[in-house]
Length: 512
Image: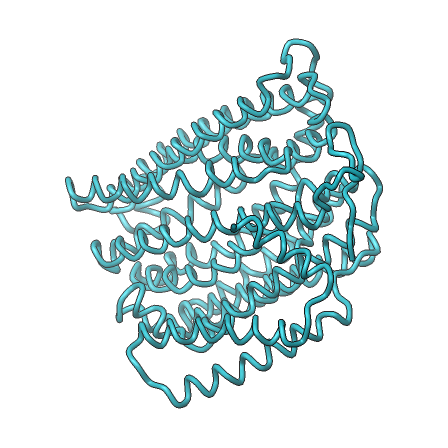
């Protein structure tokens, strides 16, 4: 199924051997996924170092502060990163300065809001640490950690602006590669000098500041030929904000469902339980990396095709995007399910092995998420952000209720159950909403090959883990290798579809 690129101002004429929408999406998805894999590998390594060097108690305190502020950081951009893509995609190719105005006003607003928020949290740190969480050691952690918020919030808007070009390399460098490298290096340097938890906290602040500097530099390179003074803003900041706020709250409540469990564990249980659950949830985040890579690339394509009213191509790239998101996720999911204890022991240490059940439960919820595709992105970019926002709020409330009911009796396993149920229901609803509001659907009979490959891989891994009992590191390595090779090999034996061959051809070309 060859899908030719749409013709628009500033785009290459498809009659002159261009990349198709699928080719372009495949290439950029490869780049984005590579950046995410690189940064996540460094993040895993850094978190493992923090856990091993500082101990489970300090790691738990770090996790409480990080997750609390991470939740706030999702809301701080006020959805303006989505607004920049939604409105900016109309003016990107015009080169007359209107795109610049949208980015400038959006970034300035977010900078002011995030500075005010950081100041408020800094002043409230004693109340948060001593009264809310009843852990006085959290006060200095909050007071240092909170200054990452302005850098993180503005970085999200500026990096989104670079993605309007449909070139992901700038965003990958600014949000993934540079912050991860700087974070690790600064942590190692500060820990060598002080050997305390603040070394990990300050490293985050410096890392996001570095990432923002890189994003601003690349945005300037992309837009410097535009005459900023030539035009006033084509849409008011109020218009962008009205569109963006529902997307902000939808993302906020969506992230809350995956983060509030850790905050509530910190409220009901000892800090050590938070550390164990944080370690388990780090592996489930691998799915978020895969989804982020595919969905980030899909966002400008959906916005562009929706403005062009081209629903046929929108459905086509939705299908390919979803299918390959599932294909990449299945080997990860099966590895997590078959060797959760070995994974936790190898990466974080034997004391974290008790989090294996929570890891498996969380992986199930994230696999459901991966299987529905970019439904949140599609609803947001097609003007249905209020519907997605309402669903996110309802499921967040349900999530909190389940956590409050389950955590006191079942600890972090109860938190994992609550999160998996609500995440699954939310994204299944999103799938149906896309189906009935836009009349597009990601599934067809071609998925049978993937189901057969998944079944074959499951049988091989079951036999491998039943008969072989080696050192944890060998079990993890062997299971991961078998998961990837058997799944990919079965797909190749069954025969790839035309768009899959096109996707892989572009992937191989980009890697080469």
